[in-house]
Image 1 (cartoon, rainbow, N blue to C red):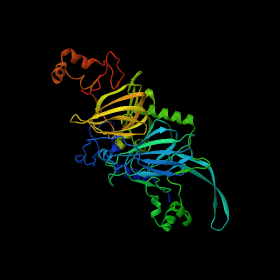
Image 2: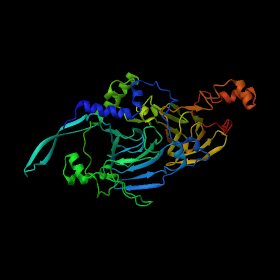
Image 3: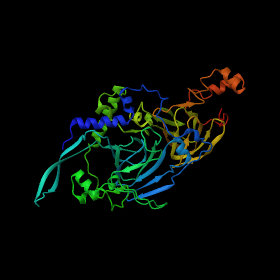
Image 4: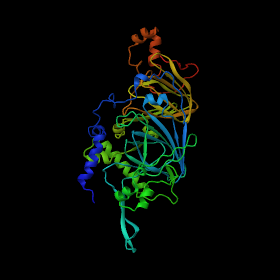
Length: 482
């Protein structure tokens, strides 16, 4: 039975209603306040963040063509921040089975390249081909060669440094077509209002099944089709019972990342066409200034990936110090739906990330390279974290807690996931900072210092903001927070 245009429209509108109006923000520009966030059921009154720890993965799930590593989602820091974290390693020719989650999430590609697709319900299959042939068997035993078309929703190429935004309940798959493993770090916002189940990450496989966990007891997670009657599936899909049982993956032990033996075949434009299309999309976004009209333009054509590694896109850059790049819903409109944002930090040798606090979001920092020392201070002036971080570790920086970072000799790099689509930061010192905005007399009386000392305190860093280069030995930089 053919699906009418009105039926497809109804599916899309149903999904829009489930998004609690978030997509309406895409069509209305940035009318919502950055201070306004989704309701979060993390139970803040029980969370004190009195002691913070750097965290590494605690569980490991082996598949045929890759590994999934989980950070303990019952860790108090993660529960208080309302997030869950995992890291995936997908080997070359590895296909991550299609699945969806109960919570929106951001994925950072720390290494590698590949192909991904997000299947939005009710949107048309715009990639089409009429040149593929299939062998069909007739019921009477004869055979017939018939021309069939293949069609599917748009696929996208991803690369190192990309942020991929995935809404709750929307199917996604990806494939490593490169020659190096893909490493992807994912943060789920389990306290987002889009999650109506419970404050834990739940993933639903559409195909395959999970294999055993190496470090813990045996765990097998089947796909959602395995719970249905094979006879009902056969009738619903219009296939025989044997095919229906294969859909349930009862005897499949490959896990959630499987190896494609002879390469994955699908429809996609050439690299040059993709680059031209991306350039056209960006130019069109700039022309519209974030305005969207119509269902397909607002929803089906949403861009789901953006690169945060490109130095030319940095918000703050100092040649000797490093750079900070933010990605929020003003630059990446789908984040209005996800209600998250990201920050990429690169500090050179001994450089500082100026003392600051996050105004309206928790920050989940994942270290991507080098080593750095981090200090975090709470509202009582107590140091709740003072330690060195290295690649692969995660640290939660609570909302409003003051934080100061310094790179070690090999530099320091990180990606931060923030629980607000327009996360805001307030610097303590430097240009456009809290101290810079105060009259000198206020600083004199507040800190009991002379006018000359107050002037130095206020203007010593000149026009530097966010990233500070190290001072010379004659003028040492004071590590103490104001």
